[in-house]
Structure formats: C-alpha cells, structure tokens
Length: 283
Image 1 (cartoon, rainbow, N blue to C red):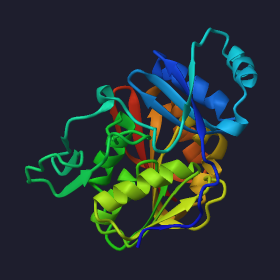
Image 2 (image 1 turned 60 degrees about the vertical axis):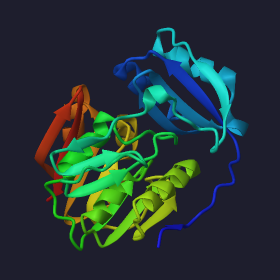
Image 3 (image 1 turned 30 degrees about the vertical axis):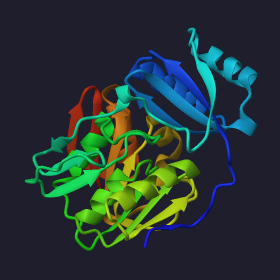
Image 4 (image 1 turned 90 degrees about the vertical axis):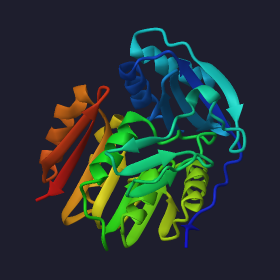
C-alpha cells in the first residue's frame, strides 16, 4: 500500500519565477536559494521556478541574496497552492519511447504497446512531467539494471516516476522521500495512476533519511549534492549502486571527485543536452 508517513502543515506557498535564465544561471540561483527555506525547484524551458512557504517568504531577503550573483536577475512572485500548481500547455509533453523499452505518456494517451514498461504522469501537476533530460537519463540508465527483489530509495522523488518504474521492474522494498509535502501529493497521484502499491512515501530531507538500500536513485540539484553528498552516500548498502542525475556536464568532474572520496567507482554514464547521469558502485 502507498503510505505517507507525515502530513503537511503548510497550506500556502509562494512561487518565485526566474524567466529566461540559462541552465548555468539556474544552478547558481538554486545553490543560493537552497541556503534559504525554499522547498523545491523546477527548471523548465522557460526558466526556473522556486517554491517557499508563504509565511517564510521575504522579498528583501530574496533581493539581497540574489545580489550575491553579481548580475541582475529579474523575477516574478505569485501565490501558489497545491490545487493551483499547474503547468501550462506549453509545458506538456508528447508520449515517448525511452531506450526502446519504456513508454512514458500522459493519462488518457493511447499506449500503442510494444514497450516492456508503460508509465503515465499528469503534466498538469507541479514538479514536471518527468520528461526533463535529467529524468530521462535516469530512466534510460535504469533499463540496464536488475531491480528484481532489490531494495530501492528514490531521493527527492518529485513526481515519483523513478520509484514507480522501479516497482514495475520488480523492486521489492521501495522508499521515496521528498522534503516538500506537495511533491508527495504529486508522487501519490503518480503511483495511483500507475497502480503501484509497494512504495512508501516519506516527508523528509536527505539528511534525515535513514536506511541502507541496494539501489539509490538520486535525481537532485547539483547544489544538493554539494551540501549533502555524504548523506546520499550513506544510503547505499555495501556493494550497492548509486544512480546520480541532475548534474550538468560542467560539474561532472567535481561530482566524480566527490564520489571517489566517498568510496564509489563509476561503472556507467550517459549524457544528453548538457546533462549527465552517473551510475556508481560502492566499493
């Protein structure tokens, strides 16, 4: 059964939208705002969206923090709530076949058959459709892994696409966690759409998560890895696998250095559109 261990007490959020920023600028902004109480970030084609509890939002604090970048960053602020977090039609996606084996589409899309696994995600919900390059790289990398009877954790699960796929691929024990309670609402919806019932949803940050798993899926912002790589690493069981994504190519060398310091060796990598995914094994 899909379970949610904690419930949110946060009722409203503020969305800060940074239109037209590049991937590199988005990463810099995310790194700065991660030091403030911003709960989640979504990098899309039109720009970067950052979310914070409305009670904690301070425009002056935001403006002062952005000045540290050394260049002007225009932004738009609006209120948001779980029911209002929508993605415009520009952000929807066409169904696609990943690696010739995994079909990804929307609820209501016609599934033509022929794939080993079929996944559906509602693009009208926040946290994206699952069609971002970093997510697609994770999915493609997962094709070559054996999930049967394995324990899996999906760190910063967002839409729970990766957790759902791990279940379909035969994983036994699956935990998916996120520090944003609304992300878990979206995750629960994704699991229900795909009839996945063996994923445990937990509201927490990576520094709070406990346990050791055969496979750790971590599609996170690079700034999270910079601050919490040790926390991610300790979730990997001896001889376990760590699949990292959300890393831009320019940061790959730094990521591999962090991995090496924490006892990992690289066994595979993929890249697309300036992003990369790394498959690491615990020595």
